[in-house]
Each structure stands twice: as C-alpha cells, then as structure tokens.
Length: 141
Image (tube, rainbow, N blue to C red; front, side, top):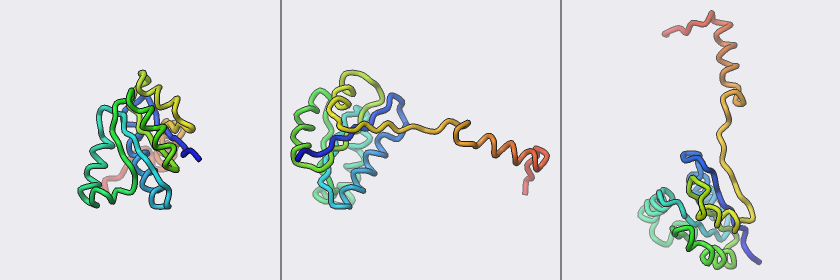
C-alpha cells in the first residue's frame, strides 16, 4: 500500500510551512508511523532543523527518513518513499514555480497554512470593548 504524500504549500514566506512539516513528521513518527520528509525549499530551514536534531539525538534517532533536494529531483524520491513509508511530508518553497508545482501534483493532500485576518480573529473588537469600558485610556500600573 502506498503512503500518503502530503505537500505543505503556501506562496507567502513565513507562513509556517517548515514548522508544520517538522511538527507533523515528529508527531506521526512518535505515533509509530513510518515517515519520510522532503525539503525542496532552497532556503533549507527544514534541513537545518533536521541537522540540529541529528546532532542532539544522533544521526539515526531523528525518527524519520529525510532528504533535501531540488524540486526537479523530487519525483523519483517521492515515488520511492511513498512505496515504503506510511506518510511522505514535503516542505515547499514560498512560490508557485515549477518545482513547487511538481510536489503539489505528487500529493494526495495539500496543506496550506494560513493566518487569520485581524477582523476574523476578533482582536480589534475586544480592544474596542475594553476601550469603551475604560474610557479608552490604559492605566500604567
């Protein structure tokens, strides 16, 4: 049975793609899943994180199979790992160029991290209520 390929994609940088990929990989590996992780982002943040994890836990103790490759080299790696692992997690670069499209097409599931807009989170409304109750002035105490 082929493993599920999950690509984490978002055109915006700093959206949490790498953090989400790392946390999902570790969580699923701790649950006993065979996990493979691929970093195709040229920035290499996930690769740097994995290297720190290897230094801290030992080269064979990171909990999952890992590779950092350019996107054009990803398809054979993904196909191979999907045949052996339960889950393949891919950290995409922050754009929609060809490399990112390759891994989106290979995915059975694409996760797109988003940040709630201020008007959705309700933050301005709470501030308005606070200001109304307190005359709009914050105490310095």
